[in-house]
Image (cartoon, rainbow, N blue to C red; front, side, top):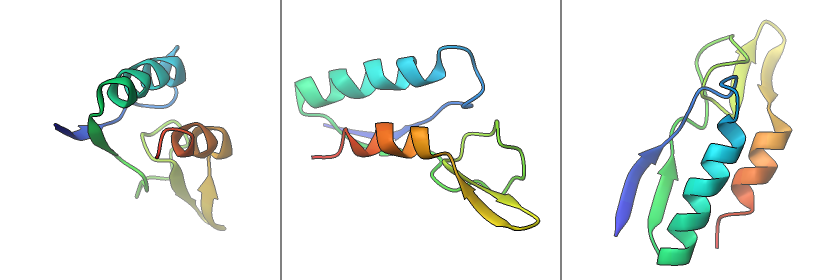
Amino acid sequence: MYANQIGIYTAVPGAMQYVRDVLSLFNQKGVSFTYWQYRSGSDNPDDQGILYQTSHGRVTKQDWLDMLISYFK
């Protein structure tokens, strides 16, 4: 089974725990997934992206990146 996309606005209260819960279930059940949206074209740090654009270049939400990496096998 394959879940085409999972994603959430990172500023939503409980967002990271929600994603952890969903990805834990996916890993337990052997469900493959993609994360939407890895790179945001927005300059809003609360957008879905793990990377977002500023006037000085891209910024990484390192806590989100570290969390997501932990679910890739």
